[in-house]
Image (cartoon, rainbow, N blue to C red; front, side, top):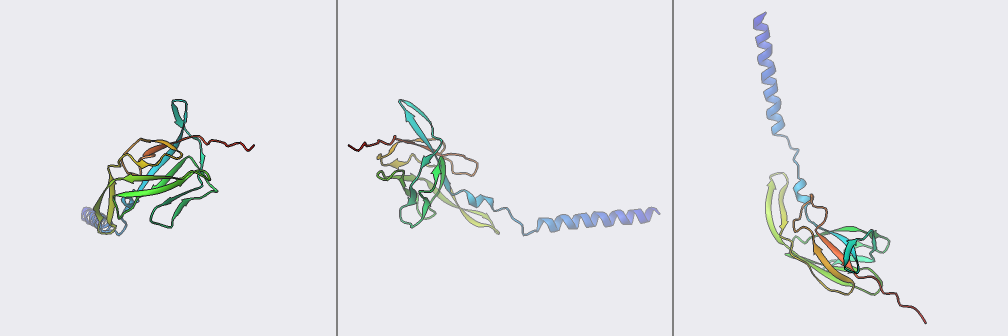
Length: 171
């Protein structure tokens, strides 16, 4: 009877080891690292000298220079937007139009590095060192850097503070 139990124990241990080995050779791989390709922007407003978060601003459109892509259109209001970074250059330039007249451009500069994620996932372009953006000041008052790290863990990289719209009265 003792031999039978020892035989079953050996079989169970062997089966368990076999399962562990097969699990370690599984084709399921977490490729989540390849998703960190966006700069996150929130909007703010200035009242006298105090800068506060804006609940939402109407965005007519946001597009990237050199592409036909429109990221936001006039049917949307935004308090926070995420913009894709170029994998081919060390900067991305976007056109922001928040009213029917004003148009601003913002240039985000960063460092890119090609990194091997795994044999299943391949390579990923890693971004770091977001620099203070270069921007025009038609409607944008200032841009405040919150975090220069490009990561899915970061909620916001920059706060864009907009000037209030000046309403022109018809006479």
